[in-house]
Length: 327
Image (cartoon, rainbow, N blue to C red; front, side, top):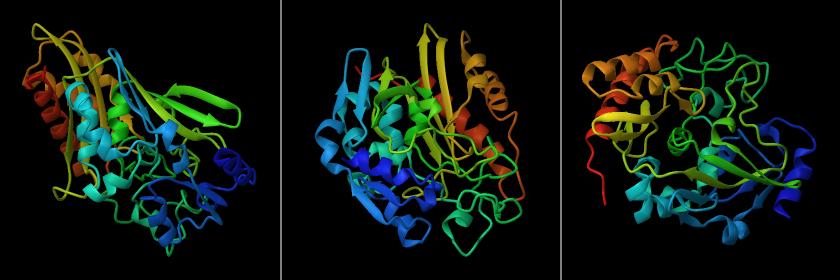
């Protein structure tokens, strides 16, 4: 019923901010945007009755499955996830406040929208995410929190989440349910960079909902590190999700994702390629960080993020290499 109602509402093909109906689970993002008049749906559809089938936490011997309606706090505190996927547990623990984590769902978290002040303040007309074709006030405005990777001449808004960086680093799959049934795709294909259409943020089809996430393998040597203006309840200025497979001092496999610095969850594949087959040292860490930010473009207020991002990434790599693996 929820999928049918959302599909009918989406038939008008309105931009997301003008959609006539929106799903509500935890509501921690939607309610904020409704209060700000950024989103004013005529109907809000409670999808929590789906929780019986969509909230399971299922660690297996060689994979992890997470229901999209699982609460962030439940996943973060799960012993098997803390042991075998610490990058996931820590990305959730460092997000929002304890009260919000008790309400917020995994699916809602990855779908949260940017905290760009020009998007969230409707007194600014020129926001291509909110009013397609109107321009981007952040380009020449106050852009300290904005992106330096994955930007376009239409939008430099930063993707705000933490959990998504862990998912993209671990090659997660996302399960999507709609009227046509259920399909799966790599999580890396879910979010769309702004390009010429910043208002189209994901590849979800009208009426589709995220129902689960699947993470292959186990990654006990993994870290999520987040730099922010204050130590709690704050979004990242820069973050790094790192997962390593180290054997006899040699990095056999490496996964690196960056947050707080890009328009979408950002996989640093150039950095990964430099790490594989190498023994870690400070020189390698610096070369890897430089490669990850080689295409970064800073603006008047956010250029500091390039140097900060390199330091955060280097520290996350050091922590991952030296961490003690829990048995």
